[in-house]
Length: 237
View 1 (cartoon, rainbow, N blue to C red):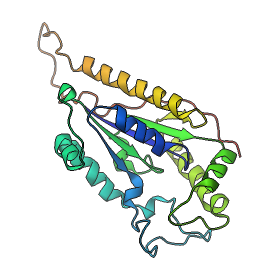
View 2 (cartoon, rainbow, N blue to C red; view 1 turned 180 degrees about the horizontal axis):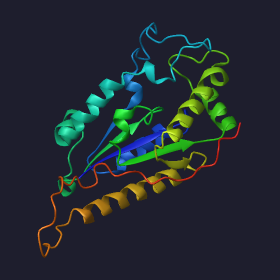
View 3 (spheres, rainbow, N blue to C red; view 1 turned 135 degrees about the vertical axis):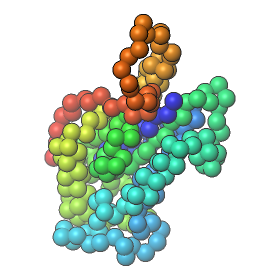
């Protein structure tokens, strides 16, 4: 069985930390980071990142990312998880050789329509405005934040894309980024393990029908199960 798990949400919400913990705990698990698909990599000149009407480089917009290349990478994993794992230095565990998990981590995972329906689970980390701003101020970025970036660009773009996601009916599991790292990790790990268990049960052979049923398309197990929605509280500003 194959599961694609999205770890999305706001900047400095805990996405990378949670992803790293899951990567160590889950069997045959690979990861794709959305940050690796910026059209201008963080360590190169930033000429390809446009300046928007807000006066800032548009880092937090979908157009600054090569999402077609990211989709191609996901499709490469789907076509051969074993080959993808080997190419990325991930050893396939023999006791779980039929289980393969791909983690996608990033800010705008649920804003690119060709990717949205590929997820088995979609998680979305949130923290309140003041906490997010404080965490951002303590980070050292390769490209330092210019004065006013958070309020002038980062937070407005987060609100814009989240509102669009919700308006488009993209169902996600909201996670409280104020919880401890361990609590978040345990919560998500248990949820994914339950999904794996449910998939295993669904893939068990069914009893032969008493008479032929109507024609049906191929069964894909849990590869494209929809994440259960969880109602969240609005971000405080």
